[in-house]
Amino acid sequence: MRIELTRRMERTFTDLQARHGRKKSEFCLCEGVRCCSEVLASPAVADVALAVVSEKLKSDIPGLQQLPLAEVADEKLQKLSGTVTSQGILLLVKRPSTDADQAVVCRDPFVLAVDKLGDPGNFGTILRTAKAAGLHEFWYTAGSSDPYAPKVIRSALGAQFSMVLREFPDLETLCAAAGKKGFKNIYLTDPHTGESCFECAGLFDKSVVVIGSEAHGIGSEAAGCRVTIPMPGNFESLNAAQAATIVLFEHVRRVTSRRG
Amino acid sequence: MRIELTRRMERTFTDLQARHGRKKSEFCLCEGVRCCSEVLASPAVADVALAVVSEKLKSDIPGLQQLPLAEVADEKLQKLSGTVTSQGILLLVKRPSTDADQAVVCRDPFVLAVDKLGDPGNFGTILRTAKAAGLHEFWYTAGSSDPYAPKVIRSALGAQFSMVLREFPDLETLCAAAGKKGFKNIYLTDPHTGESCFECAGLFDKSVVVIGSEAHGIGSEAAGCRVTIPMPGNFESLNAAQAATIVLFEHVRRVTSRRG
Image (cartoon, rainbow over all chains, first blue to last red; front, side):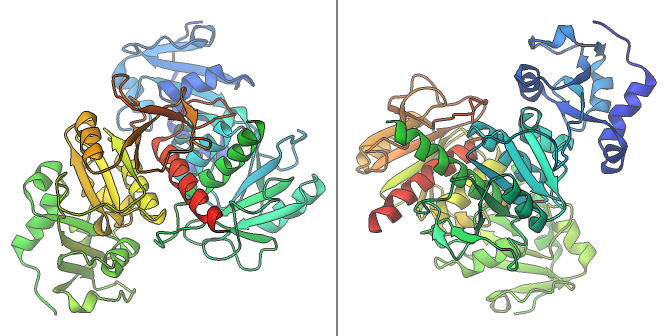
């Protein structure tokens, strides 16, 4: 359905580039061909309010023509975009709930959680990798990146639109909620101490595995079993997204090897 | 040893921010407290020509006082820096060789190689993770990021200064060189086809494991066994750095679990 882009719509886009504007908005912004394709192809379809494309967009993205769709000059799209070189498509999407108490039953064998992970690129990469590993939920504490900030959406390729995300005020509240939901064990990844993640038998048995921020790790007061990723090269700590990836695909390995 | 920063030295720093300037220079630029600390702590000590610190730098970095060291105003350092907010320290380091034929014997059980990996953040993260996983060499083809570009050095936390890097003109040449060095098997990671990386017995047995670029993958004409990372979530492909991380730590898992 072709529509005209109004000034008010334009304003909505530019507001969403800033943290302050996002806080007040019920929308979020999804950008780029791969990311928008994923969002439109996602089975639990994201609630897309509006699509804006450049007249120069070449890709034919399935589902696009059924949306309220505005075609604009390339310069105009560039102005609405948060990236240096826009890829010719923007979606305005209803911001999903991140309420910790939302009424969805989590059927994942374990939950991956991040504590105060402030780097948007890492946050998005972890979401994308968690989705690829087959998880349906993702938990995080306040002080982390906003999962619906444009940069996080781009890094995650829109994975957040087909997952249930829960935000908790702090790690203690997150752990208490985990217990109530039947996730009995808390594992805290630690660069130095704990059982090897490759040998910990209960790591994915109705548990929550917490990844700390790269700068601060997980507070020493947090209660849970420490697990560590062996690091023969003895070089610094791993990037938070790499640590999460190793844990996620250790789970994939155990599940897929059991079958074989 | 305290020195004065000359105009010529300043020019060397600003030249290194641009690709063109880097091509002509025998130096590279290392920035930030964690990265510079790693470089100075590295056992195969990098050849540091000059350190510039801000008068506001608080950290006491071991080895710094033994270098030719210029202390400058914070605004001046910010001008020399490639980052939006400088961390108060820059090192000018002699650029190590990336000659494919350099005479060092590779004693790693396998080699990780990337083919035309152009994203500097991914390239650096892979180097950092390879170093953490215990590798001493890293191979790449032309068309990849410059491993000594400032952004790659920051992402790698300076891992490139304590590894041997070899650049090959293309994947064919790389594979031919591998054979001559005794690395008999070539494995090409593929998002869709091939044996699971978790079940491939020979994956790390004097082999080269190649990671393609995210945009283009590995050319279909390349000769080698395809291996794949199982992806239960069926979501897009993995980010190249995540794929490399999974492969690297599958090796760590096999080595550390064998011991147990």
